[in-house]
Image 1 (tube, helix red, strand yellow):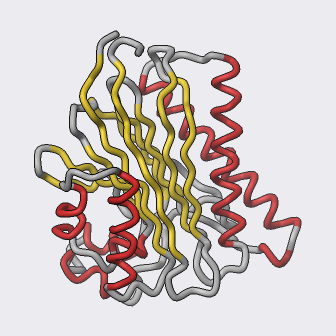
Image 2 (cartoon, rainbow, N blue to C red):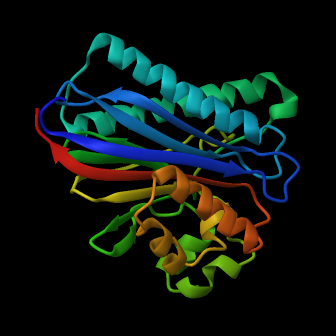
Length: 262
């Protein structure tokens, strides 16, 4: 076992919900970290509903990230967490241009787009890159926090005091994005953040089909249980479906264990 390495347990689960097709995409892969060790990259993407190319866009986004980091692994690039966050942001901006070009070449894919939320786990840091209204949560010391900000018109209205945050999930404009990957409008920037990783941290990446129907207390309760991450992910999705989720529902759960020594 390499020194200062975390035991990372993760699981993914996705369900079509009441849609005709599942336009969500999830991905897990190894990624090079500043220490030279291989960490993990976790991704959720939600193709824009109502657009025939939504599923194509979410898959293209995941494939683009996979190709980017396979190249970095091959070249053995090593930098600080902030440098990795910057390169992750740059990769997403390139993916945005690539998806938009694909849409211009095929009229059936016109205006396709996707959300994209990424979590990288290193030996000491978590690194997040985010566009759209999928989310990344962290459970730490019994407190569940959302580490991302939704890029929606409703979130902008919350900031301006025009919408009650407690009723935002009922607002008719809640699905209207102000920022997405691959649409006709060029993506201006990608939100990123880096945080120190702590023993027993638990992360949840999910699409809006999950958090729009499950209360934070339900998510916290599930993530707090002593069970495999794969079981947590599956049960969260099943709870959302049982609660009446109409959209696709996807979850990635990442649980950080004790730090081991060689």
